[in-house]
Image 1: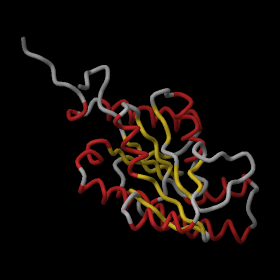
Image 2: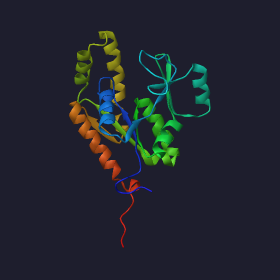
Image 3: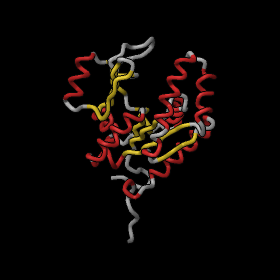
Image 4: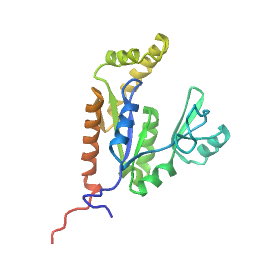
Length: 209
């Protein structure tokens, strides 16, 4: 049973447009919180140098991935640049049931699918917390992508077109964090987690005797 010092665990779904700071925030959050663990994603793409199966991703062939989709094993899944990605329901629930807070680095499409799934499943609905991270302006986001110097101008323009669509979805999330610095982004994310840990349905109520 959960207690005030050990509230029920969270399923934290974090989304952001490209350049919003999501990957960095996830890394910082995992490093600062021993009880937060990431959900390992399935993918059909080939491992990159240094990546390990069952640690960085679950690497599946296309047929196996499709069979899992058809069997309803995924909370959400999508195909990006010809490769499929998905979050296993068992991966999330096993970690939640062990008492761990689960972090999902997820796009807006995946977050929408997850919210829909959670509406139908009490255990997911009670745990789910959705957070959208972005810069204050689109021009600031573009400046970050250019500073990163990883993409051509054409690719940056494509990312910006996608980013405008993604940012428009922010109202569908419970929390909005305006990205400023790495330290401040982490502080605000920690504040969200602290607040959610004190929600009525996650703590044991005080006794009156």
